[in-house]
Structures are given as C-alpha cells and as structure tokens.
Length: 251
Image 1 (cartoon, one colour):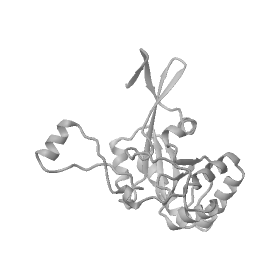
Image 2: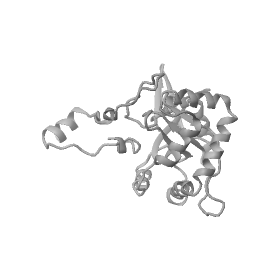
Image 3: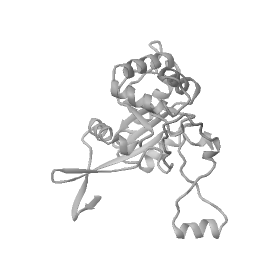
C-alpha cells in the first residue's frame, strides 16, 4: 500500500470506484495534467462509419498546440488497469484507430457542432489559434484531421509492465497519462504523470510568429549519477529512453 505524507498527514492510496470517477478527477484538474497548451474537449461523440463495424465512442478529444506550427488531435480514453487488457483495453484502442479512418468528415462536423454550442470551449480554442497560422476553427480541424496523424491518449490508474507490453504491440503507441488517488479522512490528493511527460512546456505568445523547426533538435534526458557513469562514461552507450510519439516525427 502506497502513501503520500503531506503536512504530517498520511494519505493512503485508494482505488477509483469506476472510470467515471477517474474521468471526473482528470477533467477537474485538466490544467495541471494536460498543461496550458492543450484544449480538452470533454464530449463523447460516436466515431466510425454507419456501414462499418469499427465504431466507438471516445471519452473525449484533445487539441494540442505545444508546437503551434503543427497542432495535433488526440482521442482520449479513460481506463482502469483492473480491466482486461487484451479483451477490453486493447480492442478498444484498435477500434478507435480504425473508426477514425472511415469517418473523418463526419467527426469534423460533430466537433464543429460541439464547439459552436460551447462558448467557453470556443473562446479557448480561438485563443490558441491566435498563435498559429490558421484563420479559424474550421481550417484548424481540417489540418489536424486530414493533414496530421491522429493520436490517442490513454488515461489509466496504473501503468504496469503488462500494460506496457500491450502498448508495444501497436505500431503507433498511445500517449499515456497515469493518475492515482490518495485519501486522508475527507480530503483527496492525486499523484499523476503529465501529458507528454518530459517534454518542456512551450511558452504561448499571443502572436503569429512562426515556430523554428530546429526548436525540436535537442533532447534533454534526466539520469542518475550511477547510471550515467555506468552507461555513458564506462560503456560509451545510452539506454533506451521514453519519447512522446507525437514529438518523434518533429525531431
């Protein structure tokens, strides 16, 4: 059993009751988990052609403006690690990837309708567009859905080795965000990993200044002194490191 000690009070790790509770925790703290450069579209909309068996209802969507020149679109899926990995989580991820290929135009219309009817969401996206070269929300969605590769974010309560083994079976592995719940009496705390963990946050500037492609040609990797000496100095090597799948094409 894991604990967090905060102000001389132990918070005990507690399981989420269901996926809805996990989702509520993430949505309530989205600015910390996803960061200032990301817009979470917290709506469930069916994807996939009516003529296809590959349909699904993602738990939400993300618009990522970390690189203003190349924003990206992601499906969001909330999962509990206790669910069957290969009977539930794996097929769910594959179904979303497949459904997207048959319904891009339909999904675009649904997203435009959602954004149009949510003034706060609309204003948030328009503010982010102001730092890009896109004229409006329609042109932005055209780009992220038709010109860019679409990704997936899996939010899960525990990233086990079994789960990592499942992810390695995908040619395009989803981004992973983990969040754990800790409780002490009537208070709740969360331990979480951020979206695109390890990628330095970009500063949003309210201008249409073009982003230099060379901004992504440097990787800073954290390391412990013992591992650095053993791998880099003694063996002239460096072990495998985790790089966000959305960043790799920009390196």
